[in-house]
Image 1: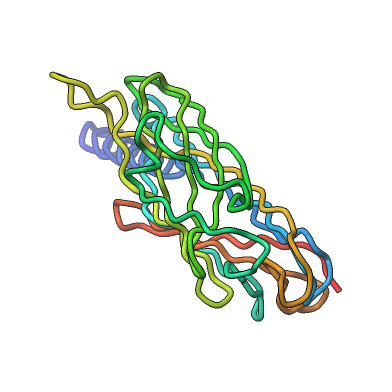
Image 2 (image 1 turned 180 degrees about the horizontal axis):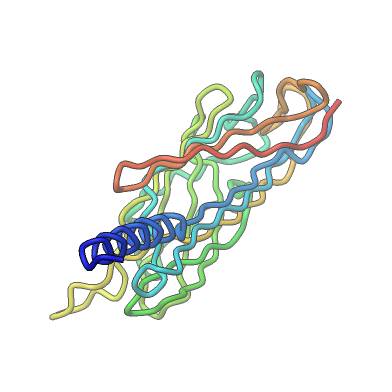
Length: 239
């Protein structure tokens, strides 16, 4: 084989290897989601079970790209009734909820709980956090996320409802901020949330929508801060 041919073959091989490496790097980011209704009967009171997680083994510190919004669309006809008389809205402001030793939401405003995991590399690769959901108004819930990192300020997420849709805007979070240190941008890498079924009939907090071919389909749309997006469908049986 001629030297020129050898060089061309090597160059082509290197190009293929580079493309493979790029493909692997892109494929290293993964997003999983499971969002389901707890009932199996259309039109009945229901709760919600949600679990979301993102990973990227190739990113520095294992920190995946940051999430900006999650829009969850439940089966047509799903009804969110945050104005149900079974709960007392939490009217506290974000400032009140994030003030050390400040006031807390009324017990009757709590409608769910869960956990979260935040990557704040290089400060901390895994910061655990508790999550509590409160009704805030007729069309809004509050997720109060309390990181276990000492001195970390709680993060407040305003979840809005519109028809059969929930929208979860994920704010930019900086942890470890102190005098002389700007802090580290944290990325929410996992969120689990359980909203138990509450009430019945017209007083239900959540009522399941249509069952199509014996299946509830819930669609989650993820939008990231780099403007990329991803759609994931979750299913559960129904009648």
